[in-house]
Structures are given as C-alpha cells and as structure tokens.
Length: 261
Ligand SMILES: C[S@@+](CC[C@H](N)C(=O)[O-])C[C@H]1O[C@@H](n2cnc3c(N)ncnc32)[C@H](O)[C@@H]1O
Image 1 (cartoon, rainbow, N blue to C red):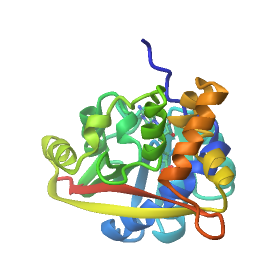
Image 2: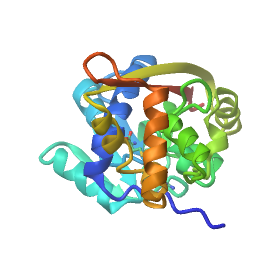
Image 3: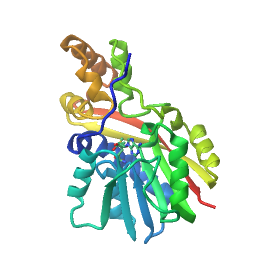
Image 4: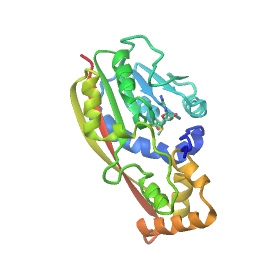
C-alpha cells in the first residue's frame, strides 16, 4: 500500500504543534552548540522559522539563511521575521544552492529524518561550511519518549491505522548520527541527549494541536469517527489529565555536532 506523503504545507498549524517543541529542544541544542556571535548561519529545512527565530534572538548571527522545500512553511517564516536580517529560499537539503565555504554553521532542526538521503544532506552541509565551522543537528529519537507524536503513533497503530514513516528515520539514533558525521569527514564529533516536556491546557488542546500537521494529520484524515473515539480514549489512559485537566507529553531528541576539517 502506498503511504500517504508527509507534508508540511501549513506554517500556522505547524507552529501550533511542532513550533513549541522545536524551540524547547532548540534551546537545549543551542546550549550544547554554544556558538560564538557574528557567525554566518544556514538553517536547512528551516520550515516556518521556529528554530531560526531562536538563533536570531539568542546568537547574534552575522547572517542567517533558511532553506526549505515548502512554500507554505517559508511564507510563515518570512512573515514572522519581516524586516529582520534573515533570508529564506526554497531548496533541498540534498542539493544546497550555495557555494563551498559560504557559512560558519549549518544546522538541521528536526529535519534529517525527512530527507530521503541523509548522508548526502550531511555531506552538503559539510561542503558549504568553511574549515573550522560547525555542522549540527537535533532530531527526535526513536527511543524513550521519542517524538511528541510517538504516543499518538502507538495508539493509532493499535487501532489499525499507521501514520506514514519518514524516509530517513534510520538516521535518528546517536550511533547512526555519529556514523553519518564521521562518514562526511567531520571531526571533534559530540552527541547529546535532549529531553523536553509540554503541558496542554486540556485534552482537546492536546489533540487538536498535535494532529493538525506533519505525520499525524494524514493518519487522522484516514480514520473513521469510531476509530478516532477509540484512539482518544486510549490516549486519555496513556496520558491522564492532572487535577486541572492539563495533559503533559514528553519527547526525547538526539543532538550531534562536528567540525569541518
Ligand atoms: C519537522 S519540520 C522542522 C522545521 C524547522 N526546522 C523547525 O525546527 O521547526 C521538517 C521540515 O523539513 C522540511 N523538509 C522535508 N524534506 C526536506 C528536504 N529534502 N530538504 C530540506 N528540508 C526538507 C519540511 O518541509 C519541514 O519544513
């Protein structure tokens, strides 16, 4: 059976769900990177600019370029940073539209699992970063809490509906990331495990925010009302509300950085 395609075509829906998660993990990732100010940054798969804004606010970059294949995401990024120094263009991680040595830092924030050829994407980042610069990523883990969507995927599967699997999913473990970074010739490689949490004001908020974009949207669209009710009951059991009705979800990510020789 052909899997429904994972699309990120709605920057606002993405913001409601993954924007928060991306920035939570992104703050820890930036602590791990501890980048100097005045660097030339490339944000590969910048999406709606969720992580890009963090860099702009906290890293004083000399330049910031974001690329992403989705015009819907880029439109949101351009609007949220209107008048700022960041520039955004359409592009693919596997064929970066930049000259060698054009940047000091290239990052992929929650992107590598969506790229069909992750090794090519890492090699491309290493190509466009100047010697001494940094190539880094953070990506939801398959272990522990995993992605914020993991609890949904497990419940949906139990109800007979499988969310589509990202093409580069194998590239998300710390060992696989280390191999990718080493194969791209990067040096001084370090990994770091990130854990983040998010509280939703109600179950309805949790459900609506989480299923409006990314991998879960096509899964919910394929479910009948009875299956949705069953999945919601299972989710309420897995993540019970606190006394105020709030639901808390957790997620684990792996981060990696390496230096261009
Ligand atoms: C989960 S979102 C991450 C967005 C953003 N980096 C963030 O931190 O919120 C994944 C992004 O990867 C982009 N993407 C998918 N395939 C890609 C590719 N081959 N090259 C670059 N970006 C890609 C999607 O369009 C989407 O915006």
